[in-house]
Length: 355
Image (tube, rainbow, N blue to C red; front, side, top):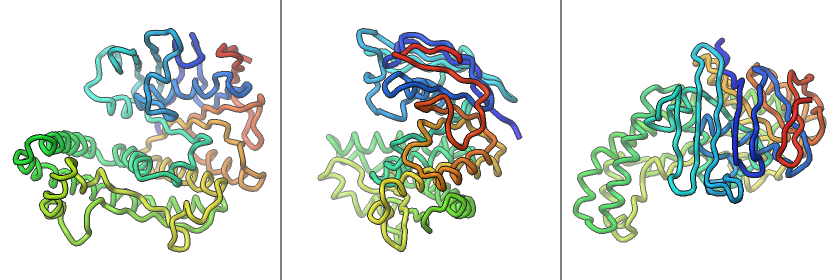
């Protein structure tokens, strides 16, 4: 089974980290230090290389070190197809990304070259907040198992932008975009439905192994089930003209997590939400590994936080089953339950040194 690992990481002007160059281990790397030292910033740097964005903030400028005009991150992977990846954020030009020395056509190119996922202390928001996070969680997996999904999403997003622009000033010009919206939106929804159906056995076994409450995942497609998307767009046209935005379609979809037929966020404690959200991510990675041979890098930000010994053991066992590259952070130079890391770094005031 091919393992893609990030073996070199360089970054400058990322939050409190002025400059860093690390050689990561293809199996397990631990980064430890006090809160605020810069541990999570290093995980952000890794995530940037595979996603072109942070997992902590939607505001790009927050990532750039104070007084610096820009930040950049560079990395090298090893595996069947080694790559060199680079991402630069500047305050005036936004994001620029390169893959093997060439500008990328889309950030999706980074995702294909370096698949990476994260479990952090805010992962409960996957359950607690609105559908945007869950759509992103779902689409990342669909993108990797359905080769044509990226094309469908790109074409849908382009048609959606055009229809919304027309609704704001030229409503009569919105209708021609509905044919493309309907065609691509149906493709997106079908791919999502199929992914969730294939995920179900991995989801249920992961819940059981991690001693989570019984739960099910239910997809709502973003328009009435009794209508095609084309019909729904026609029915919503007058409303959309008033609101100046498209109110139906897969961009309004959601993945509902139900416990005893009730939304999980209404019945689970914060700790249970974190555990169940982690189970969603681990089940997703198991599916990708089984169906595509893809073994993404997994970032674990303080994985011992708020887990008792029993649930910690179940979580560690499921992570270990993945046999993927792990990059972990902790307050101490070890994490209960995990095996001895292959490489250890200590972070203090944004400065990193090997241990």
